Image 1 (cartoon, rainbow, N blue to C red):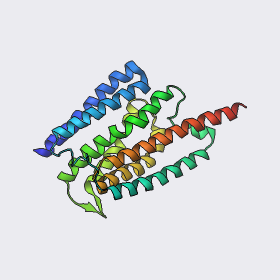
Image 2 (image 1 turned 60 degrees about the vertical axis):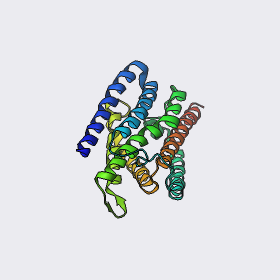
Image 3 (image 1 turned 30 degrees about the vertical axis):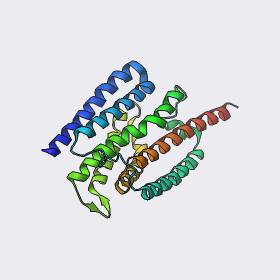
Amino acid sequence: MLFSKFIILVVIYYLLIYAIGRFFLKRKGIYLGNLILGIFSIGISILLIYLSPINFQQAGFQVGNFKKGLFMLLISFILILGSLVSMKKMSLSDLMKIPYGSFQNNKVMLLHVWLVVGPAEELFYRGFIQGNLKMFLPGSIFSIEYATIIATIIFVFAHLNNLFFGRENLKQFLNLLPGRIIMGSILGYTFQISNSLIYPILIHTFSDGLTLTYLIILKKRSLNNYHL
C-alpha cells in the first residue's frame, strides 16, 4: 500500500512538471521558463515528501554526518576543477557543441543554475526518491545501497526531458550521459553516507554553477580571439 502511494506520487510529480514546463516554456521562453519550473519543482518536492511515507529527517532535512559530507564535497570539488581544466583545452568548435552557455539571458541562466537547479533536483531525486526507496529496498551491494543505485538511474534518465523540451538533441544528450552518470553516482552516494541533502545540493550547485559560468567565459573569450 505504501509503495503504491509512493509510485502514485512519482507519477503525479512528472505529470505536474510536464504540464507546468509546457505552459511556462511556451509563454516565458526556455530560460525564464526553466527558472520558474525549477521553483515550482522545489515546492512540489517538499509537498510530496510531506505526503510520502518518510519524514523530513529521513528525506535529508538535517545536518547529518558532517565529516562524510565534507569529504565528498572536497572530492567533488577536485573533480569539478579537473573538468574545468579539460574544458579550457577544448577548441572553439567543440565548445560550441555544448548546448549550454548561450550568450542570451545570461543573468537568468546563471540565477537558475546557482540558486534553483541544485535544490530542485536534489529534493526530488535524493530526498524524495532515494529517501523512500531506502525504506522500501533495504540492502546494498559493495557498500552501495540499492536505493542509491536506482535513484541514480532514475536521475540520469530523467534528463531525457531535455530532449522533449528541446534543450538538447540526441547526440548532445549522449555526449553528456557519461558525466551525468558520474555526477549522479556521486550525489547519490553523498546522500547515502551523510543522510543529509545539504551536501548533495552544494555539490550539484557548484558543479553546474562553476561549469556553466566558466563555459560562458570560455565561449566569449574564444569568439573574441577568433574575430581578432
